[in-house]
Every structure is written in C-alpha cells, then in structure tokens.
Length: 118
Image (spheres, rainbow, N blue to C red):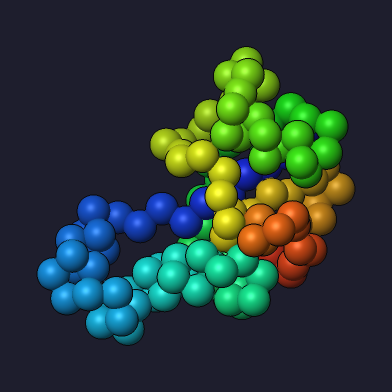
C-alpha cells in the first residue's frame, strides 16, 4: 500500500493566479509557490513544501511504477480515495509502507525528505 500526496490549492488561490498571474500569486500564496516549483519534480522540491501536500489516496500496488499506472489508468478498485485528486503527475509525492517518500520526477521517481502533515 502506498500513500499519495498532492498539492491542492484553494479556489481563492486559483482565482488569484487568474487575476494577478503566476509569479505574483506565488509571492502572495506559499502553496502556489510550492505548486509551481514542484511541477519540475525533484529539482524544484524543498522539504518545507511538504506542509502544502494533502493525502489524497492510498493505492494498492507492487512498486512505484505500478502506483503511477494505477493512479492514471486504474483499476479503480486499487485506489482508496480520501480527497479529490487529479491523475498522478510530476510533483506528486508517494510514500511507501516504511515511510520512504518519493516525488514523481520528469522521468521516474526521486527519494526526498518529506514530513507527512495530518
């Protein structure tokens, strides 16, 4: 079983992006800065960004590649949805059963320091 975490900005933050642009929204809303930076995977990730991630689902899978596949293609019965989520993509974080965390990178996964926020 793997836990999947995603950054889910609020409607207020999304509206700010639409009205003032990405850069200004990132300065005003740290969650948007984290979203923008992690869109590039591990190269943009900073451990303090972990506070902006939300646990969105658990996926029953054999390995990280299977988590990615199931999170994008199913089968749905292997996904326990906890919150609204998008398909698994670059910048999302996957935590295995022993607590090791990996960010979805442009190609594959990179192990990261990640503090799960309740």
